[in-house]
Amino acid sequence: MMRRLILVFVSLSLAIPALALDFRSAAGPATVLYDAPSTAAQPLFVINRGYPLEVVVSVSGWAKVRDSSGALAWVQQTQLSTTRMVVVRAAADIFAQPQNGAQVDAHVAAGVMLPWLENLSGGWVKIRLPDQSIGYIKLDRIWGA
Image (cartoon, one colour):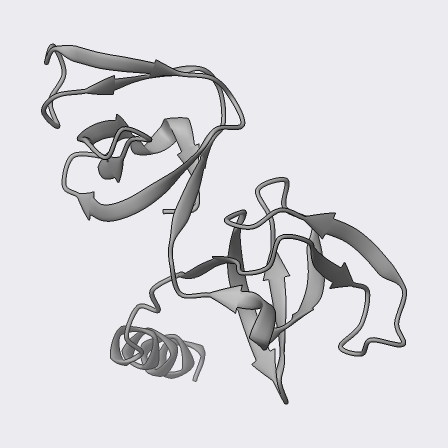
């Protein structure tokens, strides 16, 4: 019986498609995050435009989101943008190509937010720099991709 249950569990697990992470960014210049899905709830944080958030669940015009520290909060869905941004975790190099040993085009400090363009194989992320040029950063150096 136990063997049969394990087989059923494994079969169901393989049938469920992997869910992609849903990253958004704060749309307004001062986006309020709450402890419950209501403007009458306790405000927890105010974040700047562009700050990346992972949408964990959406309910009736509200989204439960996770920030780069792992904290969970609620935000009105109208305060979220589909523009994806990433935040640099620790000072990092931006490379000309998505490969180790490539030319370093820029250095960015921790906390800098950059527009996300694409996740690439090998643990690289394509981003846009403030001068509008394209660069590549290692996935483990950022949050939000």
